[in-house]
Image 1 (cartoon, rainbow, N blue to C red):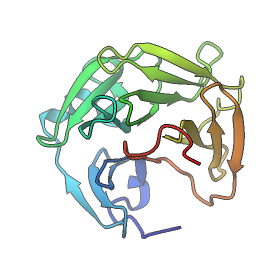
Image 2 (spheres, rainbow, N blue to C red):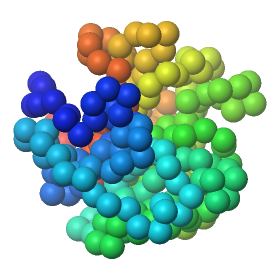
Image 3 (cartoon, rainbow, N blue to C red):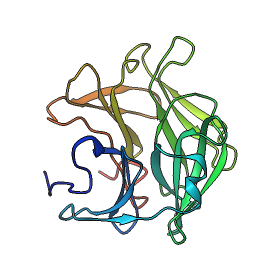
Image 4 (cartoon, one colour):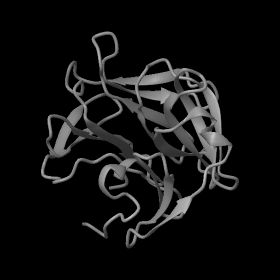
Length: 221
């Protein structure tokens, strides 16, 4: 269901990533490096101003994670190339001060999309870009950016990504993936790596798929 048009992301400034906080506010990064607050009810938006030159970050994936199991406090994590470090890194944005902090380098040189949950976990989807770095889903340590757990994906399946997004719901992960000029397919991935095709009829190249940390971490049906 389309709720509106993003006037804060016209033309080449279309969305690069998106995260949703516990209040239902979407935080959208566009290709120009601007961060915007977006009303998820009608898509109206207002610009958020960074400080400290983003600490070397310009484009990055984003995701909120609760600060602890079932706590209302949360942190916005980002991941992408950091010009100050000269490599890809994990970072955070303090939304009270709009300051950015680099946490630690990432092991893989690609922009992942991030998703968190109410259990305080942080996960990233890394599309593949070489035989040495196949696509996978990784749980990241929020203090060191080191890999805690991994969900393997079928070899070669997500290796030609041109647009990707990532979220979790009910204990499963969702990958939004497009290549070759197509609109995005949506795939559900279980924690054990079982892959289920959801739909290819999105009509959009999806680059952001935020989920609130209020979302369930297991199937409630």
